[in-house]
Length: 198
Image (cartoon, rainbow, N blue to C red):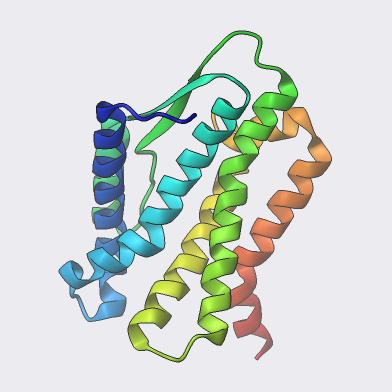
């Protein structure tokens, strides 16, 4: 059974609000400078991706019998705010810390890949809604941002760099890592590919 401490719930909510605010500030130009009205959009498009990514790590770790808890990283939240002011967002608001002995390479790889796979799944859901739901400017905005941001989060987290999910996935299974990061890259690049072709 997956349990959450009150501190963990608080950390998730604070992280989600700060990240949504940072992305809303960066995206404000696409909504005629209306930063406040973009916060709910960013909460759905970005906040869900962030929260579900971290929860996927936690649920997978608990499934293997480990204790896992999300903790915010104050410096990471400050970095997100500062970079947003510069026109982009470097989001490292916190992470799931896993406690347990003898975590195998396979277990670590599967726990790590759960987050990016969740972002890929969310991106696909946003894309399908965008294609088949009746047109609405607000829904189109949410789904477009949700598709792009979740594709980017999946790709970025799969980079085989120390501390990112990709390094652990690569160490476990390079082929699975390659296929997953390739899918994330194609999804992230899709709007640019289509724009270039047409």
